[in-house]
Image (cartoon, helix red, strand yellow):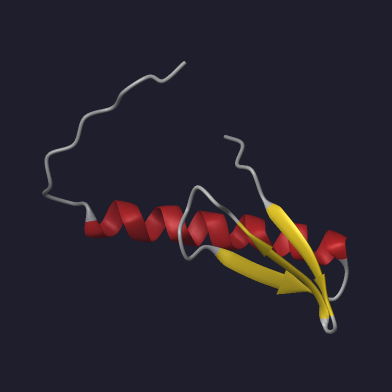
Amino acid sequence: MEYKVNIKKTTEGFSVWVPGLPGCWSQGKTEKDAVENIKDAIASYLQTVEEISKGVKSVYVNVG
């Protein structure tokens, strides 16, 4: 699965976030580190969403 990730250079390195996953962000000293770190953040985010959605009726839709 692919997600659009925004990257911003900061005074401390690089900040990254996923516009499609509110609150999912990370950082790194280099752009490469930041991109690797956001992969873990996305996995944790999706796992948390799955856990809090247990017992809730859900459906899947195809867009596009």
